Length: 194
Image (cartoon, rainbow, N blue to C red):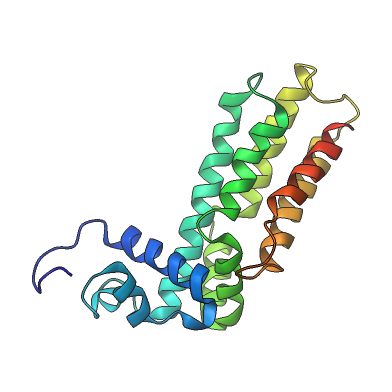
């Protein structure tokens, strides 16, 4: 534990990672500011020093993790023509499932004030599922031009199916539920058949 008055490096990420561990291990009901700071090994009031409260913290955590996924999706353009299309799409989709994705989705659902802040941020332009979908569309367009996906594949429909299915699996999973990756792998494989 850092002594009082000593700066804690990378506070946001440290608290976010601790929250993911708490929720992943004990479920969304176990998330409290004290549980997060204890897990992070830092002062009890640190979360409230950096966030207006637990709801703001939860919203920011969800937004941060969604922004990471959107950034990963933007990297797809650099993978055009490399690896397999399925592997490349997996790098994006599985980012959503990492870092406690299903547990975080359920966390946002049980905290209405956090969910509202999250929706407001998305409406104001924070990167979200629409940004991810757009990046997948651009990627599939480029792969189709190279002949690596069937010409009859409609990139907008395929991107909606991939991102929508990932979102569905996130929102209907809970800590300890079956790993959603195999279902996503099967979906992507079927879509790539055209």
